[in-house]
Length: 53
Image (tube, rainbow, N blue to C red; front, top):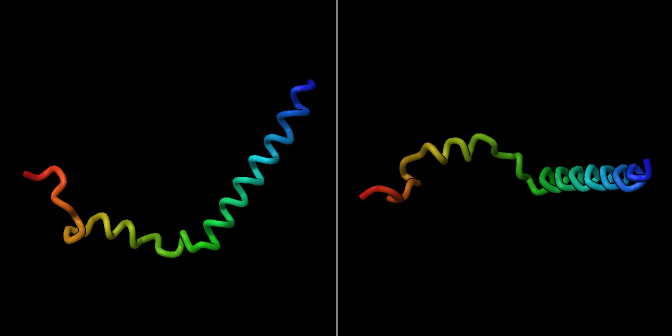
């Protein structure tokens, strides 16, 4: 039962840390252009010659 004294605060701290990381990513506009990266990966003009000989 004494392990809960360590695990509960650790779980709360990690949850708070994850929440801070989420808010940071929203504030730094990480989720603004969700389709841009998906379209960029399919665009052949941006491809390099990696693997082609």
